[in-house]
Length: 419
Image (cartoon, rainbow, N blue to C red; front, side, top):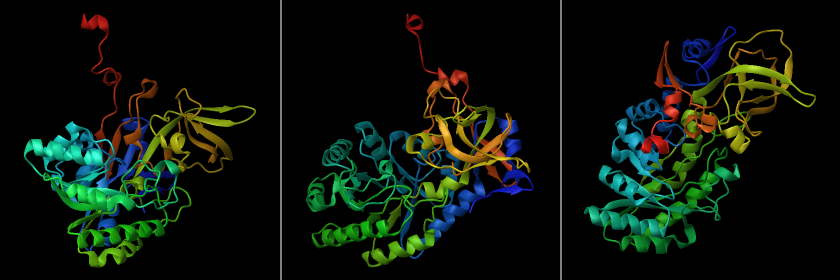
């Protein structure tokens, strides 16, 4: 459920007309619903109420400070994958004891920053990383809490670019060699081995892959305990999908029942890293039609948002529903490509899409854009990044300003300027 609905012929976000925001803030613009974000977090969190758990939002999906603060105020933590994400999270006041740090390429400086911040734990991806964390922690005179990320070799049945738990993946330790890796970790005196982690992919719409992976990991937890490694945290990652078009992902309550059934007797705190499922359908990207163009082969609707604003269609061939912000009756439907202003043939938001005949100047809403939208945007073709707006009830707030041309050159110098 989300709070983007038509009232009469006009699309609203909660109590605010989307057209009003576009008129006053400009386009393209990302718009998020505070009520939808709140509801999605609570539904997910309450689904796991029967067990010790911590919901660490995967902020790679949406790193806006207002979004992070909202989830923190609701009791959530963060899954971060860089020093920059850690900085953003701490800046919003997220308690460091609710932050887990994943990612295959943590630098020495990032590790030191996380240790100084006293985060909950590192999800470690390799033996070399494990030794580097030990080295940095030893030099700082602290102990680093770690979980080893195991690769359960489970097919998540999603796009290959976002499948992360297969044997050929770059992520994690092979589960068949995990016992030796845990023994190696326990031998390092500046490490406190507290957990185990797996993450099999993103936009997964079936429960079975999650259960298959968790059964393997839970069996490993039992074996580790028999050998003297006391696992306190079981981080099951994220990846639960959403409806973009006709997908039917499980509800959080179904997802929780299935997972809890596997780990109920383990006496661990389950750490969850939902991303897309919390924010995806809580945001839209609003864009304005610049031109319409017909060729002998195609019909095009040229809009002011491009692949630099929303990369998913170009990157993954992903589907996002597109709606007119104002419905006009009696218009014929046309099959069109919705394309942006970027000088790339891959710059499109939709291909072969049925839409009412569009006119220059009207507004379109690209739905389900709250996840991996602004966070993946860029300044390609020297385009300022779009602003982000949060709607709460009958008011809206610009929670990230539109970049200016001056922002595009901030920090740059020519050789002449440098003397």
